[in-house]
Amino acid sequence: MQSYKKFEDTIAAISTPIGIGSISAVRISGEKAIKITERIFKARDGTSLYDVKGYHAKLGRVFDGKKPIDEAVVLIFKAPKSYTGEDIAEIFCHGNVFLIKQVLRLAINNGARLANPGEFTKRAFLNGKISLEKAEAITDLISSNYKTALDASFSVFEGKLGEKIKEIKEKFIDILSELNARIDYPDEDISDLDVVNMKNKIKLANSEILKLINSYSKGQVIKNGVKTAIIGPPNTGKSTLMNLLSGYQRAIVSDIPGTTRDTINESIVLGDLNLVLTDTAGIRETNEKIEKIGISRAIDMAKTSEIILLVLDSSKEISKEEIELLNLFKKDKVLIILNKSDLKETICIDEIKKYSYEIVKISAKTGSGIENLKEKIYKLVGFAPSDTESLIMINERHLDILNRSLKLSDDAEKLLKNEPLDMTSEIITNILEILTEFTGENINEEVVNMIFSKFCVGK
Ligand SMILES: Nc1nc2c(ncn2[C@@H]2O[C@H](COP(=O)(O)OP(=O)(O)OP(=O)(O)O)[C@@H](O)[C@H]2O)c(=O)[nH]1
Ligand SMILES: [Mg+2]
Image (tube, rainbow, N blue to C red; front, side, top):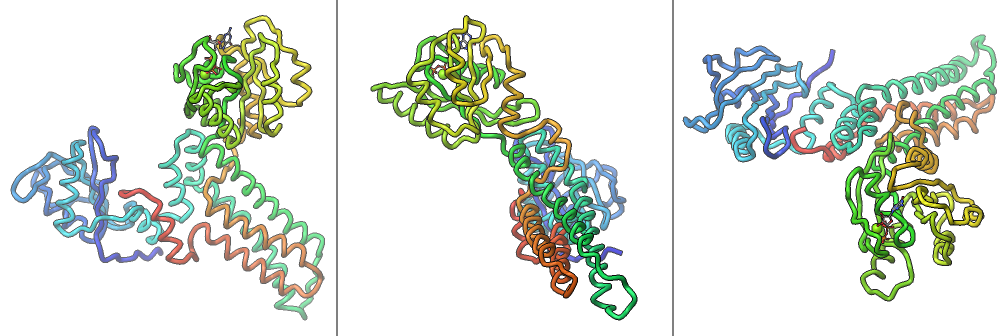
């Protein structure tokens, strides 16, 4: 049976975005939630909120003293059947910023305290309503800018990562019990430890941990997008490509070389992959002051990007400057785009092939070759569309837990010999303790506070 904590304060916050909308909500949670709401809200049918059952709503009016300020719906949740495990009243008003702030102020004047960031979810965690990794998945979910990141955090929220960790823990428990049987009952008639078999079991658990750790870099890619610079000489069609990928006329396109001066950013979705694109000034020798600044920005951008799309004009012969560009960057982050494939090909492809970059032919003007481009970008990033279907870790704390576990588990595997088994047993016990940090069962208060401080107010 879950025991529920009694928090002294009843907390309140605006739970909907601050802005104009059809409704806004104030959430009040704690022992006095209903008492406070009863002071500022009167149901139209005269029912006292104390008599309203959990999961039931009442239509009525919110009062500032004797003055009604808005018509509202109050939704009641009764402890322990609520998000926090406490009594909760949610007041739904019309979506006006001043109005909802006034309702919050009324709740506070009548005995609630303003909730800290993440405090509702923190109470839910401390009341055993959700595990820590699920609480974290809620922040990841709310802050996801991309659909794939949203899917990944939702699968953590649904408990998929928790299940995987449980499986790994069971593997270690199995190993530990075999070791401990021999340590605790040395005189009993138990067969000698099969060291090779035991090492294999540890290796298997290791490989499961490693799989999750490896998914983290993919998690970062889908969470933050891949920083991608579009660079190349002037007039090769960089801005045209930027516009094609963005789906609208983001950058100015013209046949005058040197059109783009500054860097231009746009986040785009390419199939299942998110790219943070930067279109840059065409690189060439120039004495023009502003253009020079733009070119140096382009080079800086290329250096700090994860991948570079180097756009060349395939209808022209390759220039000395282009050859210099080909020498400038690391091979594994560059994709050569031979643009203007709708025109007659003049560029000497063999010359470019010498540099052993990946090459793709497209026409940014007609859109031909885009599917090919997408595949080459996936390849360059090391991303497969099916990746989004497997379990992906996106949270840094989870990564840290798994890294620490993996290190110990490696040690355990190396250390394991026939005798003595005590050391290995101790290490495995440690791993199990570390893995428990996932759900937050044995985690200290400071860490809990740090995790919830990253939440937004009202969640
Ligand atoms: N035929 C053809 N023309 C293209 C293609 N892509 C771009 N262009 C034309 O090439 C010219 C230059 O295009 P931009 O996209 O402005 O080139 P840019 O590389 O951004 O040029 P700067 O900003 O000056 O560095 C424009 O007239 C475009 O219409 C293409 O695939 N085929
Ligand atoms: Mg341009």
